[in-house]
Length: 186
Image 1 (cartoon, helix red, strand yellow):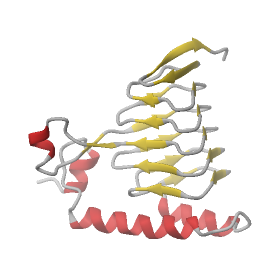
Image 2 (cartoon, helix red, strand yellow):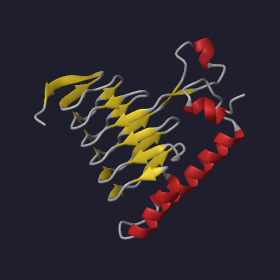
Image 3 (tube, rainbow, N blue to C red):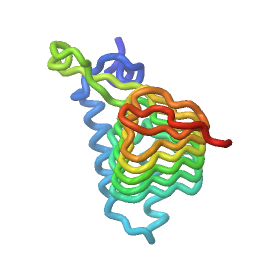
């Protein structure tokens, strides 16, 4: 029999009020709350907190507080990642950011979602799907990335976009729902 954590990571219906998941979220909240009270000069303190919070991170990571996440344990960052103010990552599934990823202010990455059929949703189970942001991607301010989405390398997503489907490499895409506007030179 699978645990609720195993179901969550497998993309199956799971119960988020499971005691193990609650404990994991409480740990993450304590860590990101501590991170959010640090000053820019506290580089070593910030790095230590992020190492405790995230599952993997490369070199030269700059996350501007406030930063919020569900678990942290399912977030993997490459090198040279910049995350601007007020980012929220609901990492109920694996959320991967490649190298040289820039994230604007107020960006949200939602790996978590709920059943769309009301009779199923009100029973309480949740779902999750992974998010992959490949190398050299820029997510402008107020972008929302939904579950199961992959953004191809060298792509820019315009401000205020809601990304519900995969976006290919080397494009500028924008809108709600987000769609490819034009090809970019690589």
